[in-house]
Length: 221
Image: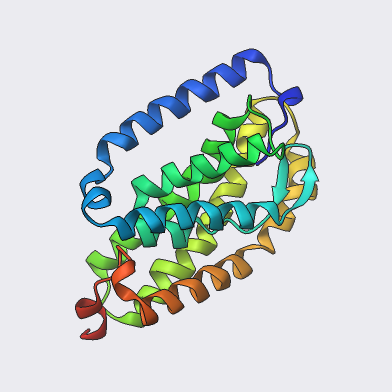
């Protein structure tokens, strides 16, 4: 999502911003800040994640005003630095895009709930479920925790964004399906492949960087 200011009423923008502030406040309380202070590498990974998200989100194809197709990359970021910092990194990346003129400040809160929260939530849910119910195997991690999470995450973001657009009274379902959702289905496999390639490289070359990856657990399973 990249809602311009002109599409939103003051009430919608205010509600979105309030929901964003509350979510970030709760997230900041859960974030493991001590790990950042004690391990400077974690801060470098967070900053790199922000730059990575900005790069991906700039490579977009607009379909409707306020909606665009692009890689999200949030599954890889979530598995790399953890969901609290992934939410914070995604929000900071959005703010930078707003400052660069690629989105409206008024719609930042709505963009957060439509584009950032769904893929991160899906990734956390699938990752935790896989660790609990599936064998501790490297290929399970790649195909379930990474590929499946990214695939379903981008789909969840597209559906959530569409529902938000309908709730705001901006587009009808038929318009969203023909101009956005149908195209989003084509993005699911590439999203899974991109996140899978990134996490394969990281887990094989620098597994200690990946907060969700226990080298002993997965390579001994």
